[in-house]
Length: 283
Ligand SMILES: [Cu+2]
Image (cartoon, rainbow, N blue to C red; front, side, top):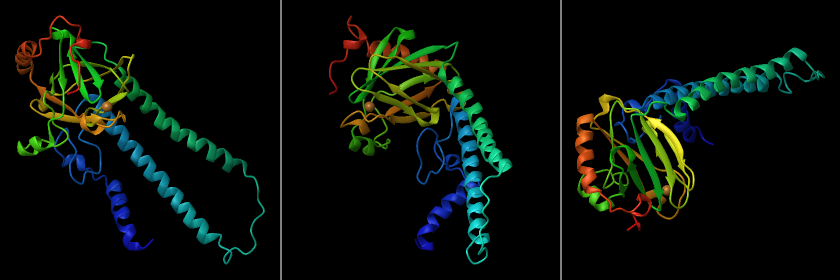
């Protein structure tokens, strides 16, 4: 491989080492051109997850550099030219203990914050409201059980329409999820057909929606993000239109949320049918 070809890799490595983080430049809740790091974290879980990612990146960088330096030293110091008569040493107790214990310590350093984050993201004790998410081929259905139990479908808007209206192609939907800021929101998800995955990078959520099973997590969007729309996509290969079932979550103030709920209860009022059959087909 020529030096020229290695250059982009070198640049990327350098960017990681100096901690260059494109998320600082990116719009909130969506990917940005030339983005290197994660999307800007929005929820408390996302902030913790982002910190954990930075810790792991540093650990990986340090380990890689140390191993590389050791290799280079061995190549130089013990080459046939400089070391014509090799040592016959086979065991070294202290060295063996060290190269067993040090990796264990590194794994402990990773495991402790990892489990803390896992339990933090698992569930919230005192949820202010619940959003039920149902994956379908190939769109999402949302239920608001705490607000009159209305249900609606959220489908991607046509690509040409999105471009014409200045919206995000492949990301904007006809009916975004609307969530109030500064509230603990319990998210429960399931599926009506195959396994989908409700993935929202800025909320650090990537949870499977499995038929016959109810998975749970939670989120909280700080007040400063009122008016922002966050985007995500299905992240479990679920069929031919897997790439066309995006997620849009609009964060609003509590007053706006109440007004939206009042409107949504009328707009999405279903007949007396149970919510699971209120929607019959994808089109
Ligand atoms: Cu899907």
